[in-house]
Amino acid sequence: MSQIRLYRSMSLTPRGTSPSAVRDRAVLLVGGSYQGTHSFSSSSSSLSAQPPIFKVGSTTLQQLEEYKAQQKERRTQLHQAKVHRINSILPNRRNLEKKHFLRNQFRAYFQKIAAQHAFWDREANRLQQAWNIHVGVLIERLPIVTPSVPDWEEDFITLSDYLEGKTRKIYPKELGIADPSEYTPPTMEELYASLPEGFTPAPRITPADESGYVQTMDRKLDERIYLAIRNPKIGTSSSKIDDSMKKKGWMLPTTQVQTSTQQQRQHPETLLDAAKRIVPLTVGKDLQVRFISPCPVAVQMFPYDKTKDNNTSTLYYGDKIFYLKGSYEGGTVREDLLQSKNEDWAWLTRTEMVQCVTQDQNEQESLFYHYLL
Image (cartoon, rainbow, N blue to C red; front, side):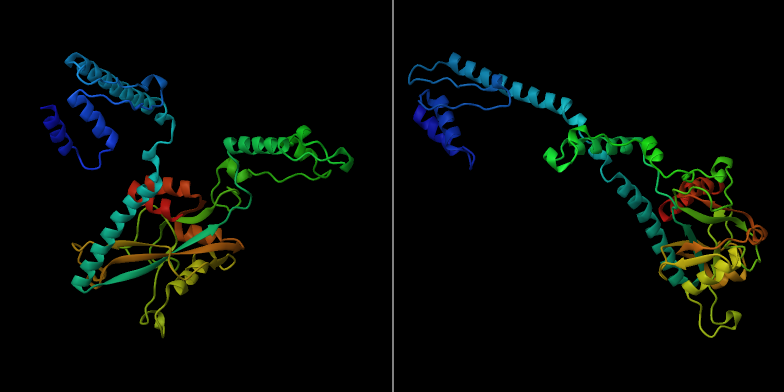
């Protein structure tokens, strides 16, 4: 009878089972014995166990139940050890939920905007209406001084210098090379004291930073700042913006691209030509701006309100603004020209620009400048 049970059990054994597992199952079913050793390894020595060696004809039901209870206790201990490891070690590791957080956040914003722009393009093609093309100019002043080092990075640099001095190779004293174990990295006070006599470093914080004056480039020397205008006046030569295009709040200098029929041009104006035209009209001819590329860095779309019966909404589906990036090379701006053509203007950092747009418009609009600047 036991032989029949053994064969039936072995025939029901899943494919790929190791020979030792088949042997253990056969021993338990027929009450036989084997002389080989079989140990269970684990991270804890208490979880290692030696299964009992059954002899033929001497195995009882009570021994079998005790063996099952031991195996169940072993599995319970293994599970408890695994749970303890998860609760004690893994929480100290990096949270995987924060991995690629910024990338996923940008994708959530960009995919929504891209789908909306694609829908507006299809609607414009369906209605056989063109877009009113505009160009926005992004004038950027690069940092003049090196960015400020955070406290944690300064501590890391000090520790690295200290460890590098301690682990440096030791040379014979006859060579005149100092012992690296006695090396101590200099402090900022010692570096300032080692400067030539009469030389005073320029301050990193300017009077404009202390007073909060934003209509100057002599501020935020360790950050990038951008020229921004607020509520450009209608009809000015610098912004050529109609009522449907005008936006409330802070924005970048913007102008309409002229077609071949406008201004008696022989060929239509390119995006780069329009960007070069608006710079002197907005800030004067003294400011020198170098455009990095004729390709735009971003685009915005503003469909017209079809409920308003005007010529602009009939000819065009909406406004499409292409932004070109330019780098400040030198010169100054004409403050009187900026003040006469706009309600306000300033040189703002990305954080300041986002805060101003959020206050004047909404958070969704400020995200555009957060990723653009």
